Amino acid sequence: MKPVPAQPTPLHASPWRWVPTLYYAQGLPYVVVMTLAVVMYKNLGIGNTEIALLTSWLYLPWVIKPLWGPLVDLLGTKRRWIVAMQFLIGTSLAGVALALPGPAFLQTTLAVFWLLAFASATHDIAADGFYMLALPQQAQAAFVGVRSTFYRLAMISGQGGIVYLAGLLQERLGRPALAWAWVFGQLAVVFGLAALVHLWSLPTPAADRPAPDASGPGGPGPVAAFVGVFMAFLRKPGIGRILAFLLLYRFAEAQMLKMVTPFLLDAPAAGGLGLKTQDVGIAYGTVGVAALTLGGLLGGWVISRGGLKRLLWPLMICMHLPNLVFVALAAWQPGSLAVVSAALALEQFGYGFGFTAYMVYMLLVAGDANGQSPHKTAHYALCTGFMALGMMIPGMWAGWLADHLGYFNFFCWGCLATLPSFAAAAFVRIDPAFGRKAD
Image 1: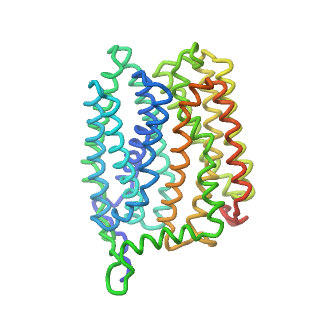
Image 2 (image 1 turned 30 degrees about the vertical axis):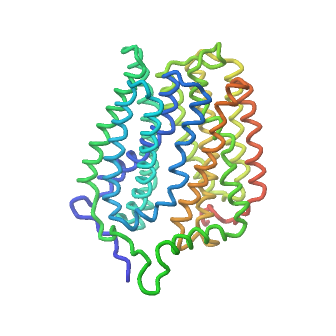
Image 3 (image 1 turned 180 degrees about the vertical axis):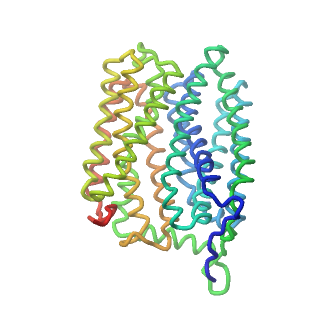
């Protein structure tokens, strides 16, 4: 059967009607689970060890999302999945708001965050699949930058604007739990509206329909087909080197990321910088994310000029060397918000610049020797799952380490923890031409 070309309805044919809002809605719940939860629990007096351990488990839905990804293809349309998941995300956010004033808020909110994380991971699968179905290939390439920009704007809104708002409300209301309940209640309203908007604005491409279940005559069956895709990934040449790189490239970052917000918020007597919650929203959530975005854009351009093989080590150094910024901040504990913002901008720019190497490498792994593969989408999803696993496990012990070592020694350890990623990089095999534009 020939594939049916994507044919958006004429009324909603322009991608500008739905691509920006769809990818903003994709980015925001991830920021809520990975960042806002950490800030909120810190404001509510939860210890660093518990925060790092419990919130690291929230990565799990992104780790295992390739396992239920085929269900999104087999059951219903991706358009329906998107709208349904946005309603579920809105309901989950309302659940957090309702649970916060209660006595068992920690256990209850964690359970709801798990539901939110699974809904967000499923939304990611449906949104990325819908994007490829609703747009012709040329438009997909043209709107990649739009996708990335609005995803980053969601990060700035979450880590910057929402954290800033929560800080102001805490000062005015005097009750952190009430302030965060109000914030999550407003987020629930936003996602309810987003679901209604996308119910109207998303096109209805003819290609967006349930996929064949591979169970017809002569077919391998859905389970065998899925296992075959997974085994094809594991049979890639040098799979051991590939998995080591995917799991270890962010080994240091996975630990340090969990402790950045507690470090910024903790009092100087505890080794932190003593920033207000709204100051964290400015320095880390706005200035830092903006620098992260600029670094990523520059990193992609540099790889397109020189190729990944040639630039892998310089990019890795640019990503890991700025970890020394946190060592300096922990040693000197500057009280100036401008100084802290500038330091975080430097660190985040270096991270964004170097992280592009990892993203391009995942594209290399997902394809074959020519950058193509019949399972490219599924294999890329598996790469992102291993990436999330590499963030989840090291993050679990980060809080315990920080509590026992103190912030200065912990960040010194973070610099040493970059060595496994360099060791893994020494064994990877990369085509010299991969990632570089033809002259």
